[in-house]
Amino acid sequence: MRAGEIVLLRLPQPDLMRDESCEYCNGEVQAKKVTVHYRHKGKLVIIENVPARVCRRCGERYYEAVIVEKMETIARLKKATKKTVVVPIRDFAETAA
Ligand SMILES: [Zn+2]
Image 1 (tube, rainbow, N blue to C red):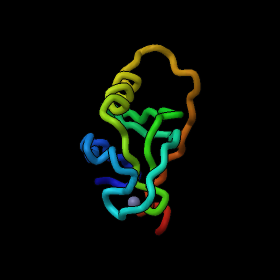
Image 2 (image 1 turned 90 degrees about the horizontal axis):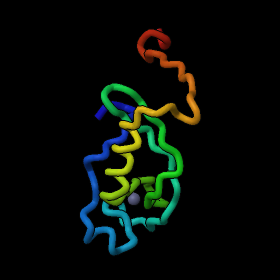
Image 3 (image 1 turned 180 degrees about the vertical axis):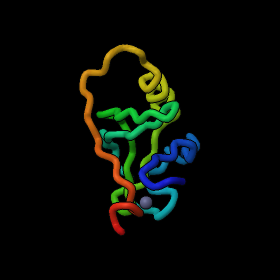
Image 4 (image 1 turned 90 degrees about the vertical axis):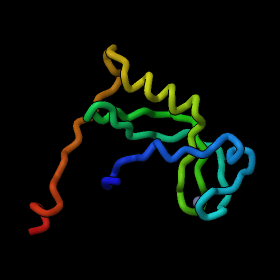
């Protein structure tokens, strides 16, 4: 896993969604709208207001399978986006020298 990337493959199974505690730390999980930095074909797509369950202790995010599918669809959309941000990308090794 590269830093800053969100791994969407580690999805909880539907039976794990039934209890409200985190699979990793057993912390309390609450429903929240989050901003997802989604990578699609080398491009970063930021999707806002994604329904997720977020662990209050470790911050682990859980997405339901339908939500992940929807994010994939959104990332693939060809139509113009509502908002675009310009993000400066710096290389740690170069700038820390
Ligand atoms: Zn947790």
